[in-house]
Length: 197
Image (cartoon, rainbow, N blue to C red; front, side, top):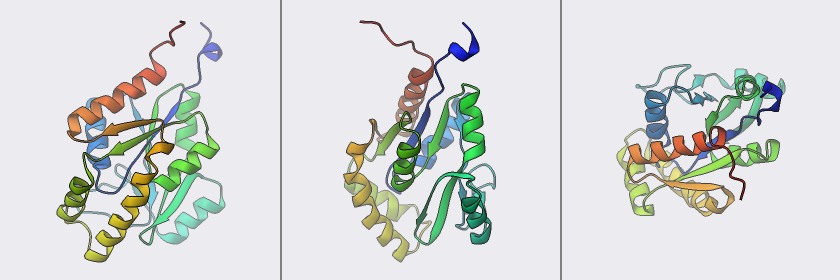
């Protein structure tokens, strides 16, 4: 089969409320499935102790971020809790042209922008086992002050209500199972031929 006859690679977006465990799932996929291309977002928020610039995020100041927006270099971007987050366009488009599966971890606002820009993208919602568990995780992770936790909890209600906008829901009751399910969705998008019924 000629290269240009292959189906185009499909972008997969992972989204869900703060505290649901998106970072934990991504870390496991990074370790177990190196064939998956993980887009690294750029953000203006402060780096956390465990984070590595260029691995977890590209960290930028607000003026650098605004230059990326003005130059059309972001596939999507959003502001949350006073910080800007965005997806660099170049690497994503390059990997898709090469036929490689690409996974983005972005918020609801960004997922909506990707859906508008790339309707063929697969949107996956990472859900908590329960709202109570989500609240416990947000308070218990100890990375945010009380005001940020309050804003994240309020925002989580909006994000949970948007679950129906997504193509697939993966429940993060057990991070290994959730990561495996997400990888199988990536694999099925690219590697499994469609059945002719």
